[in-house]
Length: 177
Image 1 (spheres, rainbow, N blue to C red):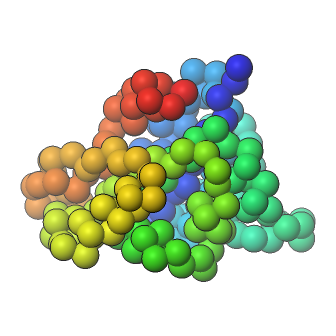
Image 2: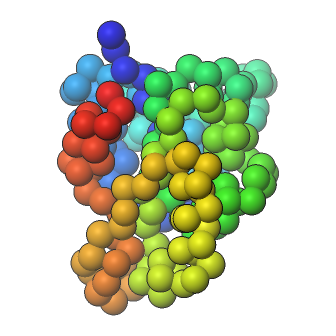
Image 3: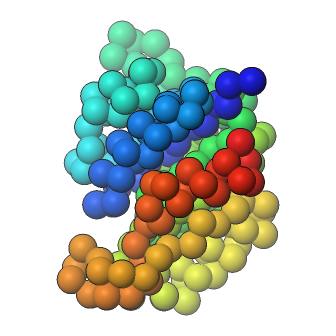
């Protein structure tokens, strides 16, 4: 059976990695649909991800032809939802049930397992509020692919790098697909 993966992309420099991850998933024979936050489109274009996924990419509630992008339908369609890169902003909204965009509305509508892969700078990642929010969303049943150590966009070194696409794919194959 073809696996259906819904990727939620947040506004982080690590969003560029989603192109490679999408390509890897499609090579596995998985069907991939993508929901992007508005800020993520500053880092990678919907056209790039649509081309690689072979599906439309959703960025807001209204499509370009005036139709409604049904977040409930998207949430019910997926076998697994991956939110990557997960930013501190979206994490905080997930932890508190805020719903101000299509990605968050879809997240709150899913019935499938949700896996998150955070990406943020070292000080943001280790901040107690971020760590509390990660623990909180895990208490809801969400799964964490923890951030990795390494060079960050700021030039600092430490934990905060989003896991590499191959590692995310391996996790999903082992745990979910």
